[in-house]
Image (cartoon, rainbow, N blue to C red):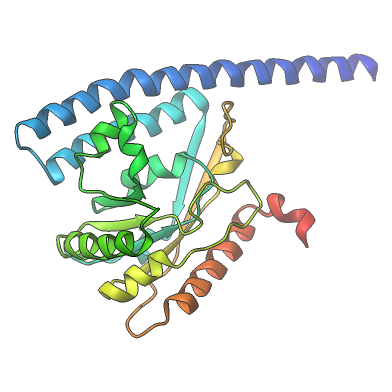
Length: 265
């Protein structure tokens, strides 16, 4: 028994070491590949290129990032519910996504059939190269210290982008939430949906199984993505609508990752 226990401990140590090495290699891969794509976007933007052409370059880098996670880290993704997405080049949609890690931030543009516009805090624009590049894309960056003005900006830009067939994506919990936990769902996304008449698409993601919040070390495994049916927003109350979105996402998270909720009853 002691011999077997010792072998298991050695195997576990080797697995941890491999995770550390793979995570370091993937971090290096992200930095090395991000820089040239960011420079391409900055140069093209300087020459007047904008819109979908710039987004295509950003999405191409994200495919490299997700591909690197698959090859280097052994992190794969499995998607269900693609048939629930609206069809048509100009069909609007607002995606409200469970937020557990950076992984889904990179993954969504890779799997979605429409360009996406993220709503994010303006401080990210100061991040060298990465922030400078996303500042050239059709995204919605807001000043959280000015709530009323920020929401008016989200509605104005969101309406314009939705009319062009760009889908708006938001994380209603506002920040990355640890595995098995529920954050505070804020109604900004549903308020935008009601104001624009765009349907809401709730999405559950189990990324923390492999890529935990704020963790440097990632683990091999499968990230499940479940896309819910569109929810019509015309005439709805934003708070009530968000409660519906929250309950669908959280119940779906329990179905997809029961181990994380096993102790919660």
